[in-house]
Amino acid sequence: MAINGYKVMPNYATVPGETLREVITDRQMTQKELASRLDITPKHVSNIINGEVQLTPETAKKLEFVFDVNASFWNSLEKNYQEYKQNKASEQKLKEQEIILKSYPVKELEEKNFIEKSNTAVEKVNNLLKFFGFVSFDALKAYTDNDANFAGAYRLAVNSGQKVDNNALIAWIRKGDIEASNIDTDPFSKEDAEASIMTLRSLTKEIDPQSFIPKLQKICASFGVAIVFVPEIKGSKVCGMTRWSSNPQKAIIQLSLRYKTNDVLWFTFFHELAHILKHKKEPFITTQKYRVSEVEKEADNFAASVLLPPDKYGDFIKENDFSKSSIVKFARIMEVHPGIVVGRLQKEGYIEYYQFNDLKVRYEWKL
Image (cartoon, rainbow, N blue to C red; front, side, top):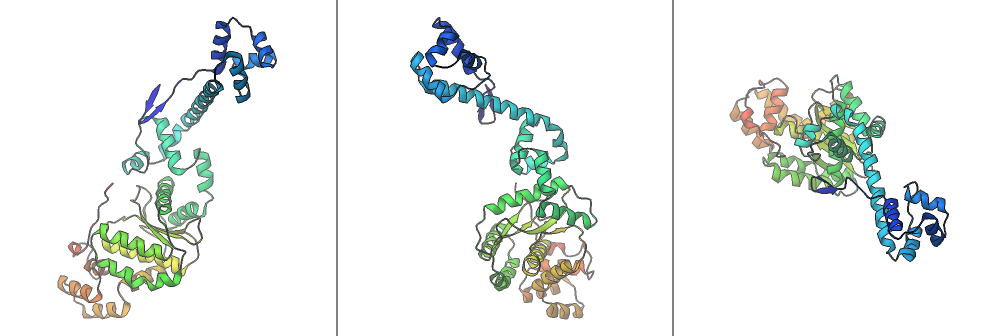
């Protein structure tokens, strides 16, 4: 009997036919006599004893009459034996797939608690396939190669000119799907989403994720969007992704906190929200570098305008005073966190990337 984690896994099982052989030997009964008593052929009795056919519930009931042993005893023997055979066959199939483990970030997935930690390769294969919800890596690949979200995300990432680890990316997306499935949302409403933008913008002033994330998720769920935070997996190079779930009335915005600062977080969030509000129901992914298509420009402009209205921001730029005190004052007038202003000024070259980073909020994942 092997102990696997907290699960007890039998590594042996009694073949029902062997037990039956012992019983008839003890009773000094031949197989031919048993066949007569059971009203079946001697050949069938031989097949049962040799494990070539299953001991059916009907036969178990007949054995109850012959030996005065409850049918449940025989049924239990057969059930346990069949489960044992199935487990061994499944274990062999998992073992044959061990070589594929090297192409997946298993150690990182374990460290991030995406999958259970395990000691053997077979257990790792088992945990990884359960995480993805597939019986084999071949089935997983066939699905992800043709799925709009998985294949679409990888295509967009590669088209941006980046070298992306596809298996890391699909693991990141899969974790987002799992998290999103646990978030109940109202049917999608573009009107309600647009009406909530200023309320969402007000959350940028908050610095504690434990405070603003539940609020963000609740507001977005009210207009049909599930917000999920999933840490980046090495090689995925992803900041955020927008997609529609299998429920046509539920969208998903998945964020990685890739750069772990509040300016990038909020810009990415509103960028992804723009895709939902303004573009087709197809996946959009934001990576470290992404090709600036018209839809991406539109999403960028939307995010920038929501966070810092163009006219007010333009006036601030004209003043040409980018001191810390001026930035803090402008942020207070705009009712956003100063880090938002710093990030914008850095991106547009008005200040250096090393300047005023103390005005930003940095986040760390608690895994």
